[in-house]
View 1 (tube, rainbow, N blue to C red):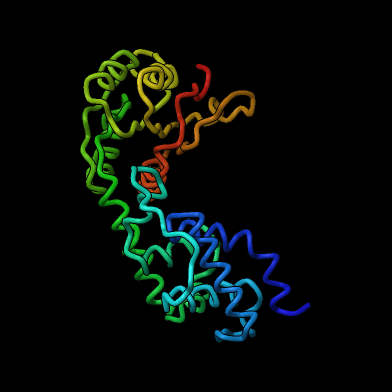
View 2 (cartoon, helix red, strand yellow):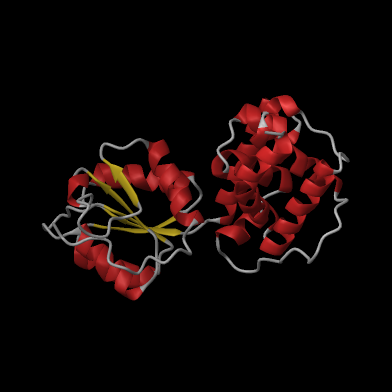
Length: 268
């Protein structure tokens, strides 16, 4: 099989990548088509030793970097606040490195080959992209936790990321009242609360009133991971690592436009 023929296997993934990179499906497809035409006409150089998938993305980037493609349609402006719009606010090279590794699954060395740069530069670009994303995602966080030490740890993690803590609620009723008052952009919730009320019930009450991402942080994950009812997208087990909480917060906020109004679980 020729390398050009092998490219067909990877085209759906390249189209996905191009769409995320440009912010528009029409523009992304046009760039992919132009790259393939240039490769077929032998008008562009690539390293065949890299293998089909890496070589295909290298071809795409070689044309993308020149801006010389004749395209059908213009890139969309991606107005709004969804994940795609947020990606467009990241600097171009940082967006490329982040998408190649986080979405396309390339290793740093493969991403470096695609971008024709060093692994160190790819690592630096990814770190920069994360900082830019986090800066644009600042929000107010409601913490539902009845243990003072754990609540204090969560407050420190939240503020270290640049977010504001609305308040710490210790019971279901306090949590629902606080959510109504502060309209948080994120909720961190334990499931076993001070008066034996349920953080799960509190979360479901809150979701009846607003669409907000909720991260459960609990010593009882089995109460949520039953496989018999809707399960939360974000669940962290106690004792937790601060890096795990930070990563979950970043993910939850980045994809916060996804629908979340369905009840997450029934009370255990």
